[in-house]
Length: 175
Image (cartoon, rainbow, N blue to C red):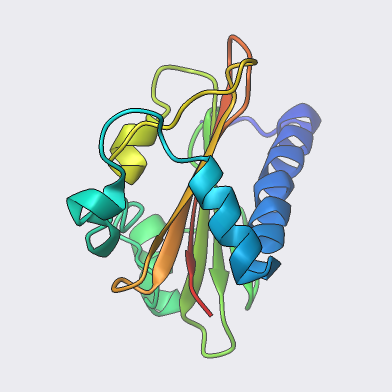
């Protein structure tokens, strides 16, 4: 049985709102700024996904069977009952270490998914999400976003520094 405590709710709300704010900020940047951010975050060695052809075939294209463009009812069948539900977004808590938000557009279709992994060994790697590693900053944090034009969405991977980092994976439909 999952025990809900004020600490868990506070942690969930704190950590789940940060990636959403970052995703919204990233999606609102001008194309030239977004291109500069993506180019700066490219890995130092090896081929970038664009050179491999991966820009058209994203490794991370669904979360627990939920995909961009899927109807809200279908997404809820795949993920179960959300901890908090509305017409525009649902919040899910799968464990102490994994939570997710699913966002819906006016047509009640999934337009974004943001997943948080708090510490633990079950956090995905950048390579498993984007198909290539990203160079970590000196503090150990990582952020990289890759656009997938043919798929019609972008995917971002963020990891905070520290011994128990928070990893956030966000997938959002391109406007």
